[in-house]
Length: 135
Image (tube, rainbow, N blue to C red):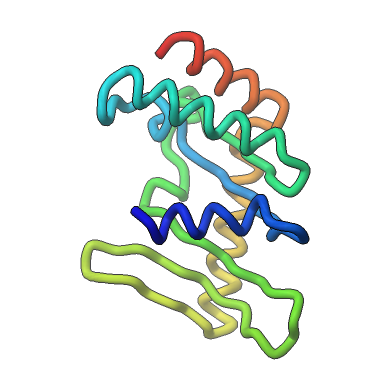
């Protein structure tokens, strides 16, 4: 838990990292930890989405199946050319760090597909606001 909190701090420090997150609506609707926990999580996401360095898109249930349903991944691209571009995949078998150009291209293509399927940031904020009110 501490590691997750520390990771989130990079979004609020001076010269914060840029984050573009695409989430399935299930991530904000599926009950985990009770209504109050869900409401707090949705409110936290809404606050983060208001930050200029954060872009949040939600894929609504109505869009049906999409490429992101196979699991989550993080594409990391760094300003320093010395740091390699990579993709992080969290799997039940353990963490994977992918660095080959072909693997990175495949995940970047999947991310672009998810961007196209997801609601835009403003519509995503409206959906998240409705989740905050309903939870």
